[in-house]
Image 1 (cartoon, rainbow, N blue to C red):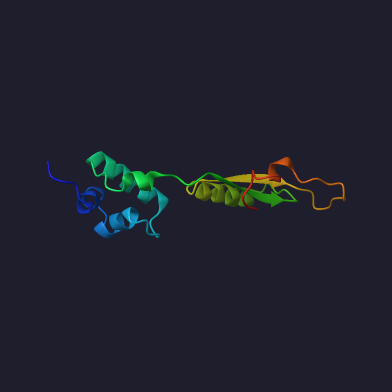
Image 2: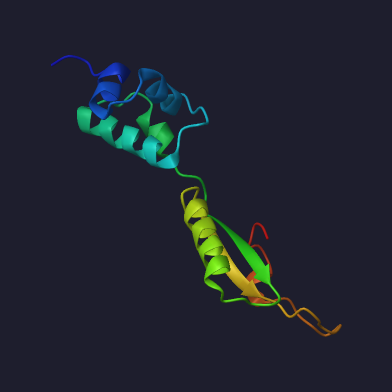
Length: 121
């Protein structure tokens, strides 16, 4: 059996060898879905050079969208949902957190936003 090449992987997926090369050299501008399909196909075909390093996932992160006037309109719900889907591809969880628009000095931040549980807002 011949050694599997990047060109073999590209041919099997109907994409360019340059795209496969970008994935194995960690270049940007390759969608998460295409990157994953390239890695899966490479494993299926027995290509192992550098795959273990590429499969190491980033640490999971949490970010929150904070709202003070909840709006259940489908327009905003769809935007938040689509944002959550896109962030998920990058190992980021999106939290929806309500905070009142007016609060007193005794107000405490929601527990979910305290400490190191959240990495962005």
